[in-house]
Image (cartoon, rainbow, N blue to C red):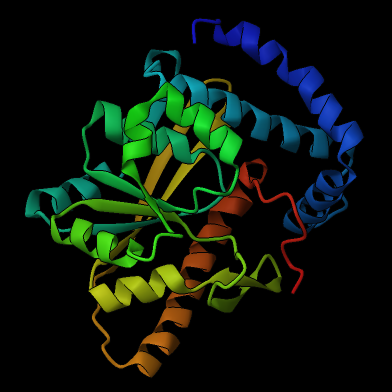
Length: 273
């Protein structure tokens, strides 16, 4: 992509206006969330700003995937945490969320730092966008482990055994997911418990990551340790422990969401059962 970023960003304003006017469900979900996180009713400007931020991170994916990092001011916090595991040759499960930009981490890891990173996701979701992004950077396609593959867990285990990192977004429940109910922004919400159950079964460290969009061309990648590996063989004990750790993950995520409210990109009724 050779279009200048300032020129491309100009079109985000009419795009934001279009989605604000034509997507009442997105508008409603944004207002509900922002009102909850800010403690007061969100107005038109706040909702439009939320949609604009999301659009900006989608645009920036293209630049990240085409290795145009010079256009951005990217700060990495606590990178030594990952470096230590990499030097030890230990596999790590990276837990993220639909918060900020996952692409900034994925692209930096694959293209700039050559980190052995695999992504656990369902390919059938957002197929059109996924195909476009993967066409821009074939390494992305090679890094994906499809959750719909019956051998996905085996592939994850093999990657972790080789000392690779496996990243997954752990804040959105899909049909058939095992779930945990955790307090989030003042009200219980459902979160998938599968990633945490997997970490406890495979005895691997869990690191939380956030690709925070700070506005303009600024991003902050932040890492936090959740735990340093924990093996629980008994299925019942593992399920109970997994639910507790999911809620720890949610509590950590809530701190980031409150600090950066316009980075949260779940545009649906998140608190619905």
